[in-house]
Image 1 (cartoon, rainbow, N blue to C red):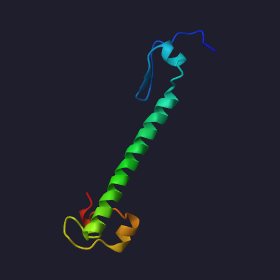
Image 2: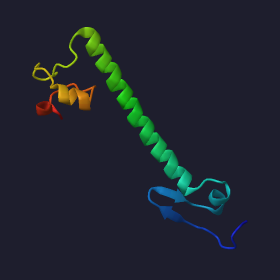
Image 3: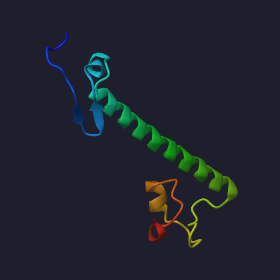
Image 4: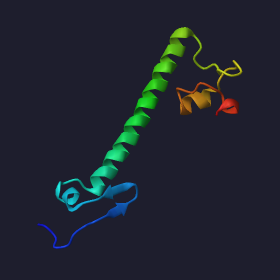
Length: 93
């Protein structure tokens, strides 16, 4: 059902609806927000996957659990909290 008023410009966050056609096309601000959330989640998961793959490479290379900065052993508690950790807590950036 079409409303009887014209939408010239509507802003919400970083999303914009600039015409009545945009409203009628089925694109909603909520869908755009959901897309942004999904993209952020996807980016985060891609980063975590990369970190896990790098940790597996360190295991294969015999350097897993060794701080990349000072070459000291990373405490077990840190590795339990973040198995992909590359550094000890002193050298977290």
